[in-house]
Image 1 (cartoon, rainbow, N blue to C red):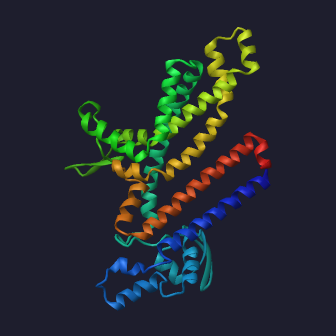
Image 2: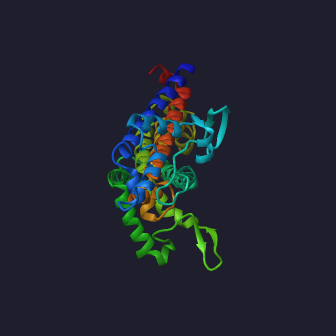
Image 3: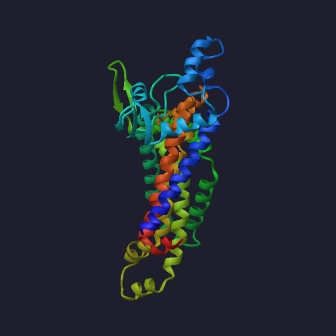
Length: 349
């Protein structure tokens, strides 16, 4: 088990390193970010100071090493760097200090705020949105899959299959536009929902924030459509396999009710592939909420990143990609470890 765990952690670290390399050379390895910060009309002295702060006066390989040192949770920094960058962590040493720290993702070109603080402020909203989406997918998908399996070859089964195929095929950004327009504009007088809105809205003229859970409904449902469709199909297929097993016939022979056999015995054994889909899709929802957040004005990491990309605010974009990739890798790694605990055969792969 320790070897299996170590291998998964090592794979995760290698993938994260690959993401760091890709992000650096894509956004900083080419071009001159100082021109994006100051424009073409800035004086040479100011531009040289910015280039020195971003290590742009160094060779590309050294820029990458310094960037890796900044974003790594373990780094080597001078006391001057620690004070200037306001690094948070534990450091040991004299002039050159080695320490465990909060990754330094640099500062926004536009707002001059620390990127880590900006992303950490937006991250909880994205997690709430992803959790709500996967909860909708689970609550609706599993019962629909069970009903489709039990009512095989009826209109219920056909409708469930058709709807799930439609849900898998439809792009999230298209469904987001349709759902926002239909339920947030055309039928807003009936639904009471808005096309856009965040988790907290400012109440004027009192200028205090109020929790608006209704703004979560449309983006969460839009984001949950695809996992809902997949969970429905997986539950249906797994239930059909389980319902043909000998122990199900034995349960019926013992006089157990159909409800008990289906929902207590069959469903319990049919949930393994569904759990696999749920853990995998939660990671993807965290990474895939960008356009949904932007369409519905949900102030999470996705909207923050798209706004930053429009303004060429590359530190925010780079930090967002790193944070999102990290959570994606961690969730998938935990899912692999969970499979290894539940099914020892996985450890042999």
